Length: 337
Image: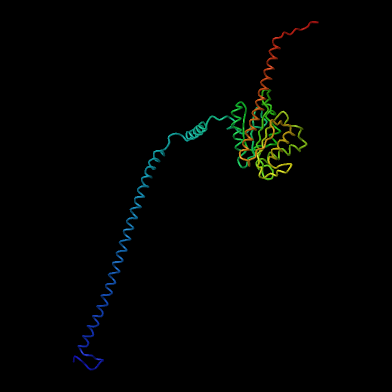
């Protein structure tokens, strides 16, 4: 009964033994799977805990940042609330305040002469000094700025302006003046206007792009047959200085490129009848401070020439006054027939 010889139908003992054996195998398998499950759960719990801690620290940092930002916005909001109250004044008052601020800024910049704020006046205006430059690299611009400052200190009674050569309509400026208008009759005490030109040298001795307007006008005025001879005679005095570089000049040439625009301007101004107060001087920008030393010497010569004219005008006025007093003291007799 317990052991049956038939393999296909084992006995009761064999069936119990085999079932127990299978149960032990299944229990071993369940122990291994349970251990794996425990390890996986522990790992998952650790990952979840680390992620939660990271999120908590991140949220704390964000909350601190937002708190600080809220504090700043609260202060700005309070300021905006204070400033942004509805104004009881009409909107015209705001325009007046803006205008007042503009006036205040202009007054804070210093008491400038009326010529600084006004537009450019005519070059042929009596008792005026016009300083023009054709600067590209800035050297002639610096000289023109220094020359303007010097002229304002030396001649406070004269109208002074400084600009680039491209800011003028030279055809109109050299042919028309304020004396053509009936509202501005010329006066004997007014001085002939003075034009001071600082011309640099461009590639191959050509005129710089800002100075081409002056070059074109001089060429046209010189060749136009409709214009009377010497239209600038007794109307304009000129002082011209050139700036160039000997590095780009051909020293063996009879017509050097350095200072060629200035020489051409002097020749054409003289043909138009303008009086040149100074001998042309050309500064070399490639040799140390030669350009600035030449400019200082040229300015000193200009001061000498202008002071001579002032002294001669004063002496002429004194002589005229003496003659008038002498004629006033003499008695005139009328012969009767």
